[in-house]
Image (cartoon, rainbow, N blue to C red; front, top):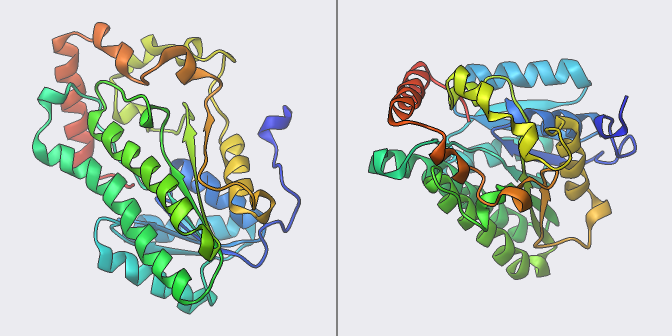
Length: 298
């Protein structure tokens, strides 16, 4: 097995710590949460759907032998964020870290978006991140707790990208928040860092954005200098390191993990405009509406 597919840190590296991971029940959030548990941390995962997040927590406990609490939470609502923090403290004694991972996205020409669609993405990604950061930060400062915050951004956070404009705006704001609070709250022993992932395939994620025949044409690996997409363990390794005491001198940084993709291609989705016809955009839009009407988790 290639070493990049294997766990990186020594056993027990996160023992005694409690982390809250938003969007922790699926995708990369779940992969990070699982590795945190394997390293000895206690983890609270949250998402909007109560049944989904509770089932995910039970499964993670069975897989890792760790303690995982699944709580429903809409990060757009500050009072719900406050509630999960209180429940986490009541269950585990205190919270030492936060991973702002909850997100949403639309692949679409901007002129096709309603203002509500724009609001949805910005509210989940940017408002959700500052809601959690503010709530948890006040708690840490008041209780003199040293802590870590890890924000999941994107490679287009600093270069922008066509066709994902709400996400680009929101993620750029998250990156500014990361760097600003790293400076302001460093004196309290609170570190802020970010990860900008490239393509890390998650079952169903790309299917919700593109028709299958378009997916077949993407050839994502051809856009990445190392010739492959990322393995979830690679990102989990990086996240665990940044949330651990081993990275105690890293503060206010954003680490890109994308095999060199953004340097080769610039804006993550800018290239798709020349490949998709108006009819294809209609199909993309209908697929997104159909998937969203059936419900999804963040």
